[in-house]
Length: 154
Image (cartoon, rainbow, N blue to C red; front, side):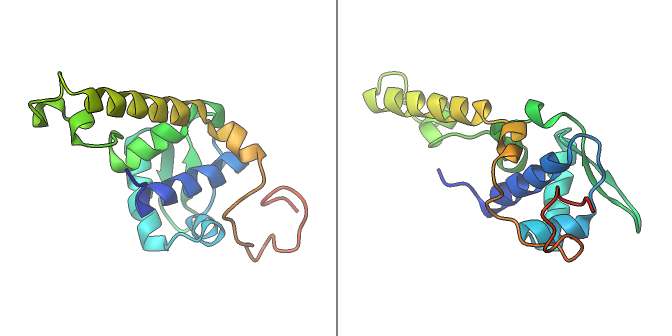
């Protein structure tokens, strides 16, 4: 299994919003620039995150996105699955009915265990914790470039 670009972009979006906290409206332009996500792609991803109840979209000239939940309540697993659907390492784990050998197969048991461990690891990683760490993929936003304080604060 490989994380899709859409899944990665969803994580970047939520990670940026988590740095601002629950309920803070952040402009689409700021998110797109700071996370290096193309604006048209960001709009599609935001729709999926909104359907999952992770963010709210505010339309209009002063619109943007805001987290609906505290970052500590949002996990990597929730964001990834909001974008790409349920994670499974292969078809025999995600759709056991697709393989008539699944119930008896020793390899299936290994895949299933690995899949459970992956899901558990992603479920343990919440965005409050991730937001405290140094940013890994953010580019300077013109209004905050060169400023050493919190993002968006002057």
